[in-house]
Image: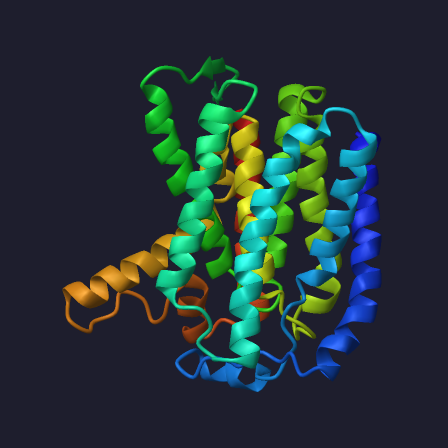
Length: 326
């Protein structure tokens, strides 16, 4: 297992170094986030806190990946995987930069949805029809791998498109409290790496490394993002991380593992969808005090620290349950 951890250790160390040097630059250039007026009133005090903190871990993760790509045989097949996460991160960067420099509302929901939908569809087409190896799903409880063929490829393409789009958005929605998204991604990335190690540590070695790199990156970022946060990752980070986790599970043939390993993300996303649907259906009534779900508990009197701790413990417990069904 030590060999899998070396890229993670490198990412962790470089994230701390990047944070030390980049944070003053973000402050100097006024990259402060404007807090939504319709959010919890306690968050107004956070206005001006630097955003784009995702650069702390995205840059080291990119360097680590490029080094593996250049010097380790067989890593070229994972280039589209990294490119997908990176492109999702670029969408988030465009949104973050727009919020700070141009319009506090950022990109519209329609703009972001169209771009991310096309990215998800593009990767789905590549994975199902263009990738050198055939798509497959590993059945739970050690049931083995089932190849996707014939007309099922089209069905799987639709599933992958929706899966990538939803998971990236769900992780993005969880980034609403100091340290919440980072803590949840750390738990999810770590347990995903363990799951792949238990399934087939040789076949999934690169994917294990990638999962650990994501976990190590956000762990280093927590030094700056824990309450009270010195910096926010922004959509740059949350979309990058969401796409990264989703595609790693997909390439291992276990996208279903995110039903448990990413359950908190899924519930956060569902809470926003249900809130919107219920609001329109009842012409103004709310199902939750505020969505996504972490704001519901926050307005109910829970502190940010309490919510992050409980949500992280739930996320870790769900990850451990996921290990039991692989």
